Length: 404
Image (cartoon, rainbow, N blue to C red; front, side, top):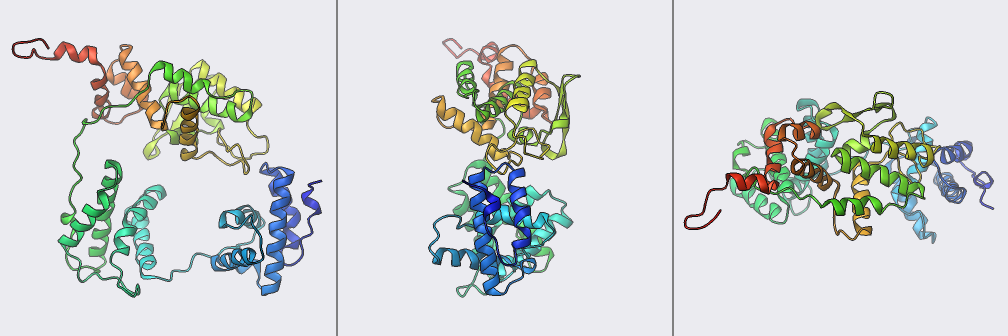
């Protein structure tokens, strides 16, 4: 009933219809979903023909105009830019450069584009860090727009304006987000001074975020909660087997969400019983692979991992397209399992705290815990000493006139 090859695509995209159908099959789309995607291509091809456009020289503005035309025509599905991503990916694979770089049409875009180049070429920052910095400073740059939004007001920028922005911006942020804000703000102010946009260096005007090392307390969960979390996965299903393997890795090895997402098939040495983890800052470490962790991963690979995927990462999306699972996807697995187990809101990093706390209570010394968690500094591991209450009682001083 739903045969994608029966969808009639006419117009400029007709030569690419068969390749798109094959692309959808290779990426795990069901016949129903693939048929719907081909209908989108058919509509897009007709629209291109009516507009007299060549698909090889399209811009993001052309895509936006097509989606607007689709809404006006009365369509109620596949109306967002995300809906076009499978078709665009297939066309790009076929050799078409279907989307041109976004047009820089505003003063904010112009400045942030220059700042992005500075971060990449002068500072050598990773792409994820660059994105985080840009997101953090974008509200600051927007705050300098004139009323007509045609220029940026840098001549009136002074220390009071910088402090005022920080106070207003960080008042509703977490400590981590606030620290990123002030760090990125110092960076962009330095860039503005180096480029001659502002005459006075205002980096020193950015206030620091209040906070003290080791002031927090690691938030682990109880062994019973860990068991409930893992047991919430329905291992009779493919999705449940994947989530069970992910959760087992997190609660047994204390790995980060990004390390789970980055795990590749060649990173597991089944004969040697080791696993290679790709950590922060391009750090790579080899750890022993516990038998239960290896077993759950093997079950997932043999019985649940989509056969259509060509991605070399171990864990991939359950729904098409079957691409690598992102760190956010790993965190969502933990959050969903916590809801099923009745544990409230929980993120992946809390399981890392749980592993460290349980090891400490079992008598493991802090240096060994730091080695398992792959901390670069002993001070990072020292915070877990605060959860060992029995050890803390031995060093507590007597209260005058009473007991400790």
